[in-house]
Length: 364
Image (cartoon, rainbow, N blue to C red; front, top):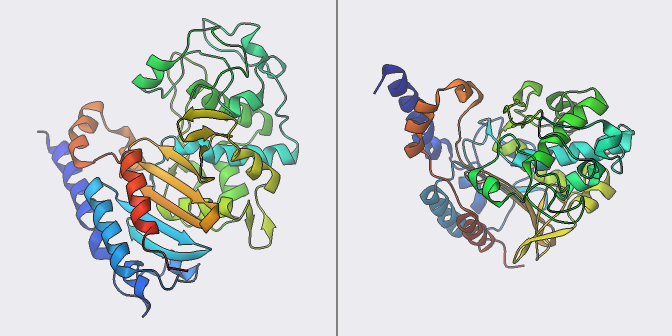
């Protein structure tokens, strides 16, 4: 093992083992033993929730550690229930980026930068050979937002599963079929920047992060990842758990933060409507997953989650360490060696975690 690899593994080990030592009792109510005693903690922005079961929340956190979570935040009706782990650490959001971009689209549409009925032909969108057909160019921005473009061109940041399940070119007309399509999501990022003339990171900071008082996000925390197969890069966000909790709370409040309507309320409604059925109990909106219960969530590789449950006013954020911005330059060999130090959290495991958290709610 090389010296540089041993150094990176040592740093990662230190990051992970320090997680449980950060938290002490902050107030006398039952939940404060699970709140960060830290002047940058969310508890200095939100009141502390009362009457939750400390014992049951502790069980939930034991399970979170067991499955590999490295940060968990729970909000209830605008109050902080739980803040555990490295909640200020900016790590890669993976596919959570798509829900973040969806919010930017709502604002850009309201500002008049974008018309969701515009077609790829109207916008001059094409791609590397094999280029888009005239039929594919009839897909609209709305089709891309719903992941129903019918454009099955190769794309950056596709997983092996996405590649295997991608329909053949021309199999479906625009708007006819749902497929979780990175081409749609990536092209939307480029279209946004061309039509607004604003980089995604700058727009997110100015339009969302600053208004809702995100503590860690910077404009430069949106990176770009190109692949030779396509003109359109992916745009991973490096974002902290506590900032994602604010974002989830913003959606729970239908886009409103204090006295400011940050995201149009109509866009939030439109975003969380299930236009397509993806699994037995899941649908898909504007780059949000929609559960049959009315809850909705953003989900990224390794177990990055924001879940919003409007019926009981709950927001839950789960993060799994997947590197920091400075680790983006690591070689593939070192990244492979680091894999045993992180454990992905599956949807099923996260669902169990949410159940344990909800069991700790006040009886009323």
